Image 1: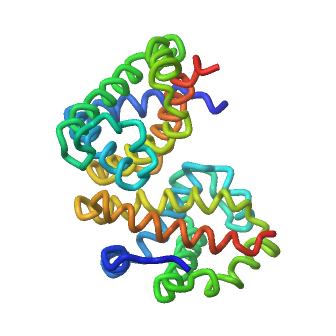
Image 2: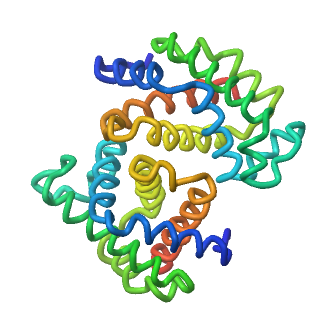
Length: 144
Length: 147
């Protein structure tokens, strides 16, 4: 279990402060990429009229997802406790296979690289990757 | 045999024509060593890999980045039969270098992220899809001779 060091948390919070103003854009872009590049993920959104990049449901949901990430940043010192209700939501209602968390995380990183090329250094990349993995673990807490 | 659409062929060729091989090879490989430090196990002879600064300034890392890009170039120029093109490379990685093939995906992810950073908005979701498909075929071909 690769826990977040104090430095990791500092790095994540500092990077998040830079990217937060564009959170909705980032969420929309990452989700669009996931749906295009990993079409099997579309199965979770079959109730949407439109799954194309830039569509209304994708925009709205991208913002929702990034709201969750923001919450996780704020609760970075205890993700398991902080994300309890989100974990219950994903485990019992949404039943998203946790393998997909990694897929979405990858696409979030791609968007960071595109939108913040000079800030998304290798050092920031490893801290953010660890954070998103810890977030995914916390989300998976209630699964079984 | 892998089927490439016209869009995919064009997108992949376009990426490789635009990126600086030396920059991308070095950036992707050093990112892999930094983000997934266990991959350093294969590079004991590379000297100082102690921290991110050491890795990004290490000349052996830069040189190996070029080797990786040369390998990708081979796949690029033989897109319709990467499996056969990579037969010897696959044997090399499995029998001589004994690289855990899961590492290929880690390097692939770093390549995607570095290329995304280089291309910016031109790296659309569809272009990303084409590039990741190319990497998936490369990885599958590298894995082929492992059993």
